[in-house]
Length: 239
Image 1: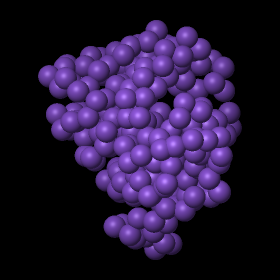
Image 2 (image 1 turned 135 degrees about the vertical axis):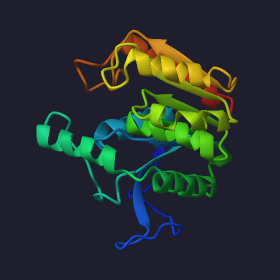
Image 3 (image 1 turned 90 degrees about the vertical axis):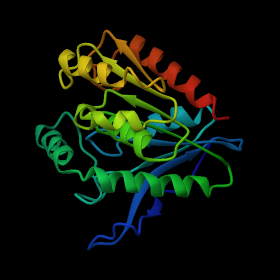
């Protein structure tokens, strides 16, 4: 595979900020194209090495992948170490401060950039983890995309009425032992989404962040493998 020169700079003039309207992203392209474009949305810790490695994993499946900064309005180049309490806490703080409308607009700008790339076939999937999982859900509800996959989105229940607007195939990966999304909330999400045949929820005997290979106490190799296989099968339909 061949990496895009870093950093990728994306412009979103719809919501100009006092320090500009551009933000960075990690990008990686497959060796051969054209291929589907995938927007990969990070957890509360920013575009970390794990996010970059996950983008590489997706690109190895034959996708054009961009992982944009979604906290850039709060702190540019935010990159937190989950093992350091102060940095971890700042990630939780930013999760509460993020403007979801502007974040979705940034995702739309990322999609526009992806579609301009010669190796992209013009079809777009959005995926994300934790906070990124919530934004993947909102992308499916608000944007004209072709598929979406959400991994343990922590705030989906706050936007659950938007699930009726999902028109593309979407899968949601949920851990039944997720300390951030209780079984009660998961049942509410399932009930609300059940009338929408475009949305499918898969449950795993795992906790939060079960796909994060560096989270020794949370990572579940079996659950992550099953979830990724389902996601890749979904996105392979865009080829």
